[in-house]
Amino acid sequence: MKKIGMIGGLSWVSTAAYYQRLNEIAQDRVGGVTSAHIILESVNRERYVEYVIRQKREDAACEMILSAAKSVEAGGAEFIVISCNDVHRFVPTVAPQVTIPFLHIAEVTAQAIKQQSLSKVALLGVMKTMEGDFYQGILKQHGIDTLVPEPEERAYAHDKIMDEMVANVFTDETKSGYLDLIGVLNQRGAEGVILGCTEIPLLLNADEIPILSFSTTELHCQAAIEHALAN
Image (cartoon, rainbow, N blue to C red; front, side, top):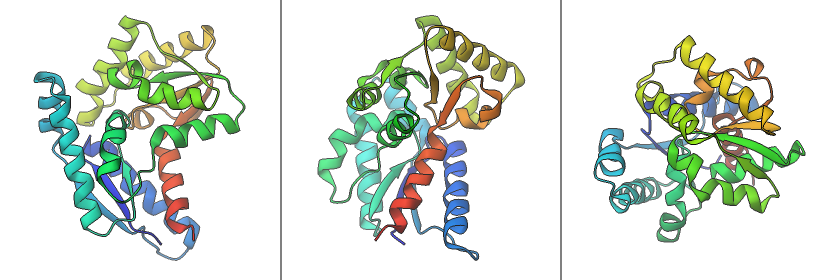
């Protein structure tokens, strides 16, 4: 089994979910009490938020991710998984500076959507995920159109992640709000919805969502173990 280099801490909540699912999937695939071969670099989310939100220094945030990537590379990782959607916007800058590949969460998600023959999906996440082109660009390469919420709806989705979910707070009120938003996006033409923040699948179960949903956490973890076990 290849050694997975995981960059986590963004947040610790979804990082813990990643670690659990990676090991559950590995045990299911290999048998016995198999554990996934993982090296984890957990960065300080508070420092990351200081750079991105308060100082608006994307270069400093990118440097944090580069340092983490080099750390797992030095620790013997054979490929890198980031347990956070929006941080993948730094992959084009970081990837050329390390010698091991990234398993990109948007690429994995796009392939899953394509397998379902969907042509238009909604994207939920933090602002930089919903408004940036790093996700939508990859989806477009696969022939998938992206529907993002309206500005006030984006603010709602973003704030609930930043103020609640990353602090391990999940409420029925927020669940209802997200389900209402997904229903509206469905009415606007979304055939499915990307849960494009790795905390959102901890809020919503697939069977509660009125349209086909894509848990980026689950898809990424499944792909990571598949890649780790490939010859």
